[in-house]
Structures are given as structure tokens and as C-alpha cells.
Length: 354
Image (cartoon, rainbow, N blue to C red; front, top):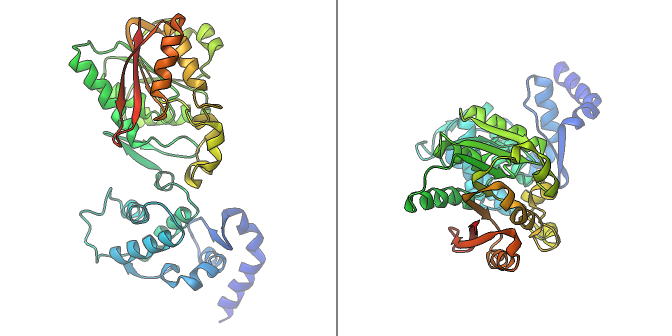
């Protein structure tokens, strides 16, 4: 009894120190650290008490099996209008259990208390609209496992298709593997690393204006044992002329540039607006074409005679890109084809030099 009273007093006096390790969600303050002592566990319980009183199934120490944990958190996610509630819960549970999916896990398997508490902490992050990819800190892209961390943009499923279209076009047109490949705006490295794995003899270079993105790309290259050169460069008219990196020709240039209209940035879901690099990786200017036009205008200085340019753009952009190329002959480009994404929307543009 004495020990419990003492801990409560200590918890009260130490509250201000712990607040630095907390995040606010609605009217509930939830701690996001892993307890290593009885005092920390008590502090966590006190700070999460409001949420746990109304949701006793997620209180620290509650015992559940895999199915019940997934079901309960999926319900919490639905109540807060979290997208893909079931998938979110299952991915987080699978991650804590050390597996990719729950396909091979017995639904009634009891989850140890320490893992249940960890699941609860991670799910509280999802309630704050943090994307699952950032919560579990990794994501599969084709046959690569990539580390994910905010604010570096999370690669979308459509981008995986882009790699497939590139390889399919190279093979069907009997083209030799590209000797030099450039990815403009490489982000976490998903595109350039996939191309490096597809064409292991190619010289692969990725550039990005974000130091955080470049660091993550390099880390993902190392973890996947891929030799990719990453440079922290902002792509514009000046850098194309000044950077030595651009002084030799490329056989393949790929880019998934910022293409969202500035006026549409505010209506993005919280998962994107609050965690990803909106201004650097998504803002495409007034019409969404600002960076795209810069790439089109400078491709003639970078692409070899038989080289190809692939762009992933907004579904409203392919026709506009085609018109821009046809109305700006000095860019020296020829629009070849538009490819649809897995949702049937025009998404990818293929161009070459005249």
C-alpha cells in the first residue's frame, strides 16, 4: 500500500517531464514510449486513463487473442473514420508478431501482454491518422523492402506499375538495357532501386531536393545491396546547366514529380497533409504542372538520342502534357503513349526526343 501511494505521488510530480513524450489526440493524452519500469508503466496508465476507461479492451495488460485484438481495433478505427480499418489493424498486429501478414497465424492465438501493449501504442498512432507505413516503419515495393519514415513520401501502388510498364516496353521493343538511368525526385528510392534491380549493369542515379529523402534512399539502397548514386539536388534550369552530374546523357529518365494543384493541398486527407512532405513532394503549383514543365523543358539536355522519358502524373495531365509538347517544338520531344493505372485512369506518359 505504501509503495503504491509513493508511486502515485511520484507520477503526479513527474507528470510535466513525461508530457514531452506524449501526443494529443482529441481530449486524451496518450503516451508513445515503451515502459521500462513500474513507474513508467504507472505514468503511462495515468495519462491514457481517459481512453482506457471508455475502452477497457485496450487498457495496459488486457489479455486478448489475435482475432479479438484485430476486431476491437478495427472497430475503434471505424468509429474514428480511419480508412481501411481492418487492414490497418491486421498490419499493425502482424508487424508486432514479427510476420508480414496474419494469413498463417491462428486467430485464437493468445498475444503476450507485452506485445498487446505494444500493439495498443501503435494503434493509438493510427488513431492520430499516422499512415501504417510510418507506424511499422517499412513497406514492400515490388520485391524490395523499404524503410519508411516521415516526411518522405510513401510510394503508391500505381508507381509499382510504372516499373512494370518500363520493363515491358524495353522488352517488347527489343531495346538494350539502359546504360544510364536518372530518377528525378527519388524520395525513398522506390523507383530508382527497382530499376537498379531490374538492370543491375546500369548506372543508376537518383536526385531529390530533400536531404531527408536522400538519406532514406541511401539507407534503402544499402539495406537492399544495390549500387545507386543519390544526390541532394533541386531540379531546375540552373542545376541542369551547372551540375556535372547532368553533363553526360541518360538512356532512361523517370520521374514521379509533385503534381497536385496548390489549391487542392488543403483538402488532402490527414494521413498525407499531417505527415508527408506536402510542400516539397506534392505541391505542383497552380495547375499541378510546374515541375513537370521544368522536366519537359530540360529533357533535351539530359536524354540520349534514343533515350526515353517516363512520367507519373495526375490523371488529368496526360492530354495536357501531350499538348504542351506539341506546342513547344523547341523542347525537342515527341509524345509516344499514355498508360493507364490499375484503376483505369490515365497516369503514365512516355516520351522521347524527336
